[in-house]
Length: 138
Image (cartoon, rainbow, N blue to C red; front, side, top):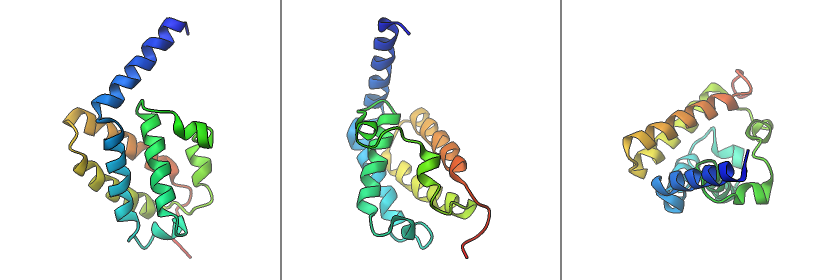
């Protein structure tokens, strides 16, 4: 990739981040999502009392993924989502609960329909990819 191509790509990603509402949108998404997670009997135990840390990590990851600052990778390295979720029992039920809370957060974000659909499609694919067991909790 040439320097010019890289500059164009960075500019396009920055424009996407701005179109989505920038930091404020991702802060709202993470906060609203974790408001739901904090009271979810399946998901809340996975955070072992660190919902605030989870909220920050999710916000940073989403900002980076959608063209914003690369703070997530600078602080935590490559996202490696599947590896980071491997210690947890991510069942289809956990996936569905995750998507329920993310859907509520996304609905509150007030994005334009095209952006909202693009984000929702990503969330569904990512949630599906995190499933690592079909066995319910013991």
